Image 1 (cartoon, one colour):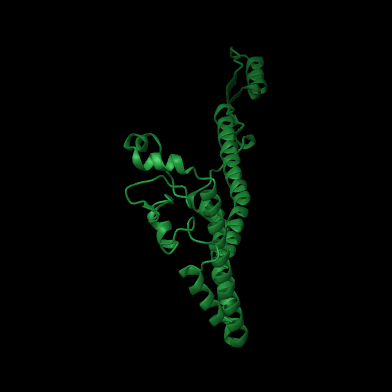
Image 2: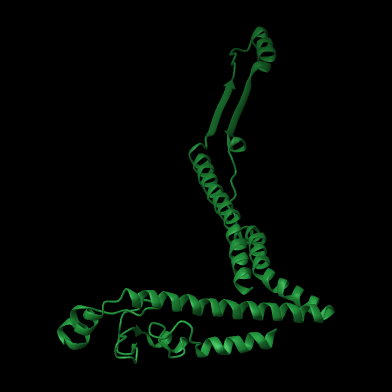
Length: 254
């Protein structure tokens, strides 16, 4: 029925929790790794700068033939050079990239599709029943009659169960204490009665049993659901209005 489909839907939604936890764990791990690599990149950056200059000049004085010869030969040794070298370890450092909003959205899409499939599976099951009813109308009619009779049987079983429970409560009831409760206003402030069906405390809208010797208390919704008949003082073999109508409906459904 509807409760079974709802229960199955809730179970399937609960099965979506492990993928959601895994996705959150992946996001958290990605953020931790990005933060760690960013710190490493920021604090491990090293830059080397090396500059040097070299100048060699040999001067030979004099005007003699030997001086001119030395100037022409040793002058080739005069050199001048400058060197500037810069080096960094940027190529060896990690280059982390944070996830963008589109990355987060794309990672959420499969999980969102899974949740939508879980929610739409109930309607797919109902559509399956509609298709089967279209091709097999007699079988669908038998199924509806079976479910209707099952609901009627459960209703009758509930009425009988409540009748037996209220009868047991009436047998355990203390008439002397009930009389004191009805006669003594002070005792009403100390003791508080409850509905025999749902257990709600007595209020101004509560309905006591019309029989003076019974004193069973009902809340207004339970009194209306029981057909305004007290099960504590009604004989067990006496049919109630709800039972008779249910029996008539059962015979009609059969």
